[in-house]
Image 1: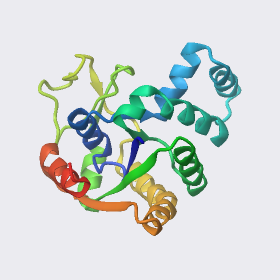
Image 2: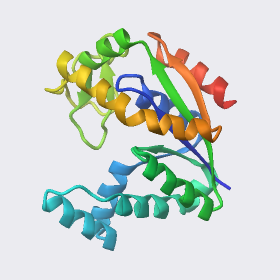
Image 3: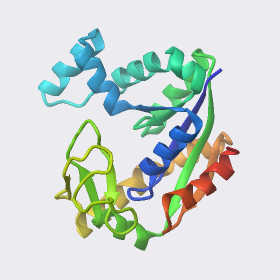
Image 4: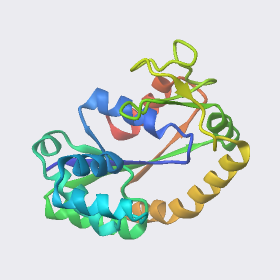
Length: 220
């Protein structure tokens, strides 16, 4: 039986950073739906060909296709041995219901869904101070206030230049937080009703300090 984890939280709460630390310390496998899409297309699988055609037509990949890719990935030996942290799925209650069935069919379980809460003022500061690695294969994220790179403008992990997204403005940040609140509330209620939801508060502190709170609620 493999354990699955999900981290939920507003943009800027530190889900990505905490997820990286969690996977590094526990050996849990990070499963990103975005990476699954890219991997399937690169492999030229039947699903990958479908995705490539859909994207080429400017359409959105359906829930059914994403769910099929997640199901295939969760059946792999490394997931069965180490568990997984799901990133990008589920985003809606119907997706959560589908995931529930995938886990049950595979003999796996939802170990915990972590809701990472944070002060709104801190979130705004983080969202407008974010810097992204320009190397898409790396995808590291920094914050010039709370988590700056060792060398200004340069990624610690791969050495590529960092950049600020054009939509990392105050107005955009407000909109992103609003969308998160509207879309995520049903998902929080869904997992809370199943007794699978735990909560932590992301503080304006080093990532390792916030990780201690995460490790505590997960018993790690």
